[in-house]
Image (spheres, rainbow, N blue to C red):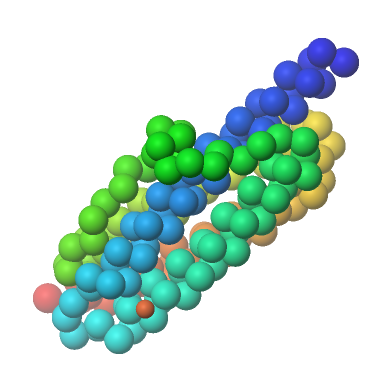
Length: 157
Ligand SMILES: [Fe+2]
C-alpha cells in the first residue's frame, strides 16, 4: 500500500513539473507570437497563436488530471517558475531564435511526458498514459514541422 502511495506521489510530482514547464512554455510561445518579425511574420505569428491556444488547453487538462488523481496543481507563479525545467525567455524578433526556442521547449516537455507515461503505465493508469502519448505524438509532429521551417530558412541563405 505504501509503495503504491509513493508511486502516486511521484506521478503527481511529475505531473506538476509538466504543468509548470507548460506554463513557462506558454509564456515563451506567446512572447514569440508578439515579437516575431520579418518576411514570415504572418505565418509564424499564426503558428505561435495556434501553439499557445493548444498549450492553454493542455495546461488545463494536466491541472485537472492532477486534481482527478487526488493531488493539488501548482497555483502560483513563483512555484511554477521553481518547478519548471525550462527558463522563461523574452521573445526576440528573430524568427530562427523563436522557432529554435519553441523546439527546445517542446523537447523538454516531451522528456517529462515520457517519464510520466512510464510511471503511469507501471501503475496501470491508462488514462494518464494515454494523455501523455497523445501529447507526445502531437508535439513530435509540431517539432517536425518547425524543423522543416528551419531547413527552408537555411536553404534560402
Ligand atoms: Fe495575437
